[in-house]
Image (cartoon, rainbow, N blue to C red; front, side, top):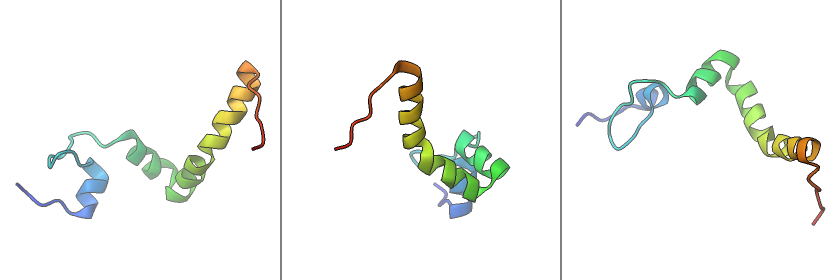
Length: 64
């Protein structure tokens, strides 16, 4: 079994010691929009989920 370098894990993913033949969609997105923009979008996704729920199904948001 070959030891994977960090670069190969990043590009091909890592699952049970085998390379995946197709890069993950997350990795493709990072390549396309850049790591900084992707991390900002990822960090905002819980807040965006709450706002979309509020706008579409009138979910109430309570302050704890």
